[in-house]
Image 1 (spheres, rainbow, N blue to C red):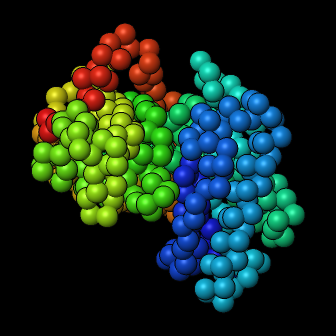
Image 2: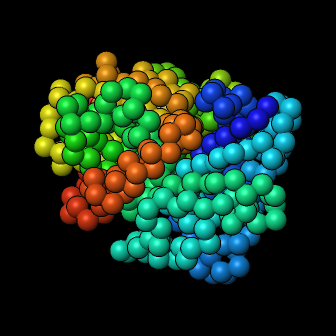
Length: 374
């Protein structure tokens, strides 16, 4: 097979990638864990790791590249092709992940005012990123960002939805929530884009390592625990389960796990509430709610509503759309003119809402620290 294109979504917890045929069809795909988690489960801890030792930046870059190259080899074998057949590539990811690939200084991403070296998308040759790990110097795009925590992954998602779902334009009101290690979300109010990010940690996208459980399955079990009366709306186990945890559907739910999920849930819901409020729109004006990301792909929407992760009044408008970062990357590979559209978002069209700057943020966050449908 000739004229193959490579699309990669470089996530904090996982790396998803695929090969496209000349016609634009997905012909092979892989999903692997991001081994950078050895230096922190979220971007802040990885940034702090480089602050402690700047050599770790290069180590984390090499980890990712080694695993991507290995997966490329596997995918090429699937379609009886080799590295020389790759003609174009695109890597989308959050600001920290892409900055690590480019070996930019990421220390300023870890403290206020969270300055980023990365701005617009970067077009280069593959060898400039992969070095001697790869021999074919095919053209490669790396996504840009709108801020330290509004990266190319969510922007790629906007691009995908605008061009495939007839939304995120000057006529509709839509909300995109990317549920991963970083909870990024953006609302479009007839062409006015407002975005924010909340720290979810590994509660959603990551698995409970000892149990091999996705966050979506954990939420399903928590809802069963609430309905049975063994978990309170404030995430407290009944006394008899405090020591050893509550086992539901082969998942052991402990107090620590409940606190982690509850904190992540509160962060996401508070972010959604602020976006809607700051956009000066009513809930019933929202036409579409798109749930994306590794966690969102497996999310039981009714259970998400049950714990108050998503507003109940939007239930009929929710659509699960999968990995929109990767889908946006495939779109860029099909038509490189979309790079201009992405850079327009990063430079001009997205207003970033800093939740921590809001004086009532902590109170609203605490108000959402409960498993209540609302």
